[in-house]
Amino acid sequence: MAEVAVAYAYFDTSALVKRYVDEPGSLQIRRLLRARRVMSSALLRVEVLSALRRRRDEAVLSARAFARLLRRVEADDASWQLVPVSDEIVAAARSRVLHQSLRTLDAIHLASAEALHREGLRIPFVTADARQADAGRAIGFDVVAVGL
Image (cartoon, rainbow, N blue to C red; front, side):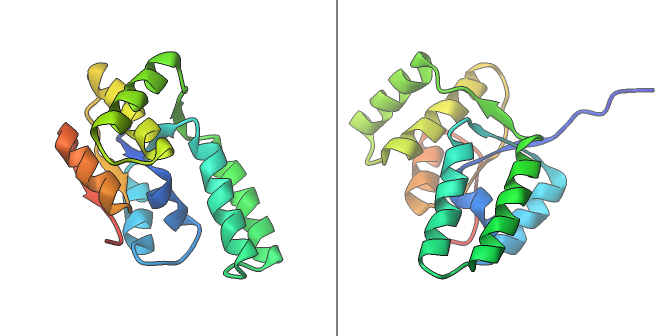
């Protein structure tokens, strides 16, 4: 039997959190996730939890919904392909923040996706952040902007 190639996309946190919380772009993310598997920075594990916790603290999510989503994130995490935050990634992110107006974690996401591109893995870069989308396009990524 022939092996089927897995289709990936690089999801930054602003996009992936829409899988768990209904907001503009959530439907598009859920469609993408049916067709693509998640590749991202290892920081995704922390950032998604932080985003959900912030929504709980702002009473957007109830404590019960938050607990349910944490279990869902933990189950999903097992299938994510994550890029370690290496010295090379940090150096590339440092360069990005010197040349573009980026937040730290956004620069790490871009540097992680760039490392994949250097390895020949050209996959869509999915984001719900306009600045991140612009930066990705400037690098030459195939950007999928959701909820913008």
